[in-house]
Image (cartoon, rainbow over the protein chains, first blue to last red):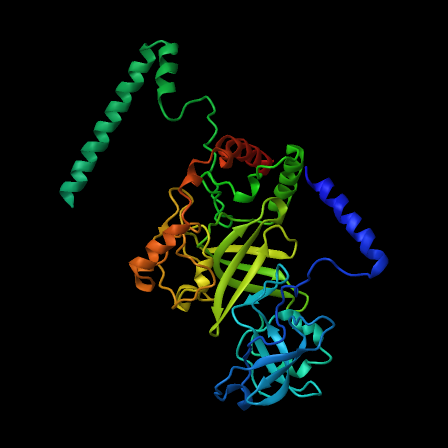
Length: 148
Length: 285
């Protein structure tokens, strides 16, 4: 009922402001994301860097995607034990595709710059659609124990 | 021995005498009476076909004699044409004729195999406890939860997806709630299901067993405030995690007028009967 009135007023406002600057009249917040900057993650391989206790949990400081959102198969930069290390996301808490698994923790595998894993074994189950990344992360898939 | 043979001889002689007597009597009786007498015997001249052998096909499961209608058949209360729902039901039945979707409830343990191009052997199987059934029509889903290698995994399967190859109910049971999302905040022992579990036999008749287990929770904070009355959860042991003051404080969010709200009423009993009949007719074709 009030909607046509509202839209008319909004269009009026837009017409006024369009001439001055192309400014948005509404605020935009970050999209609900799986893994983004400052998320605490769980390292699931058996590398020493991932498993030695530290007084701060490992956090993501950069996500290597176009938007800042990391899903399974994306590379991220972690801050662990005061050092920077790249990692590969192998599972997140956010529900994704219908038939894909959703994990209870944000899982991550430490990786070198060339894509080789730092650890030698992954005990935790890993989603099967990671196999699509056969070329880059074939060594990570090779050390994976079980697939879900 | 000799005594037995003597008795036998006497028995045979008496039988012969009786038979002779019977024959003589028959000669004097009329033919119609003879026929009637003959008809009373088991070996009558009129051909009686042998009784049909009852074939019990034990390879196929017996259709459930419980009247069960899968919840995704019941259309939601909307302003859409019922034709849309009837066409969707036809498609659902077509799929059900190809793949057997068994009766299951939230709280049952299922094993699902689905086609997966990325998995070895092209198939991927998962065993878990059903924590939620959502969606209506062809988009109906159910979520299975299990804990593998101390990692909780949940998969949301679409019931009518062509990727699903087999759905098997390992244990049929109900729980006190029809949404077990609180298992994410419960101790891991309540969500662990053995992947090599053998199917527990259940009877197709009678009531579905209700598991009245009350689950212990991890310390707060939880993902949702399960103690609040809007979730109406019966299956958690709140006395171990919350004080009575906290329970009372949660009751502040109660909406006691909701059960008397007439606009929210949706009586599906008649609709259900109609749909059950329709579905049974279509399935038997």
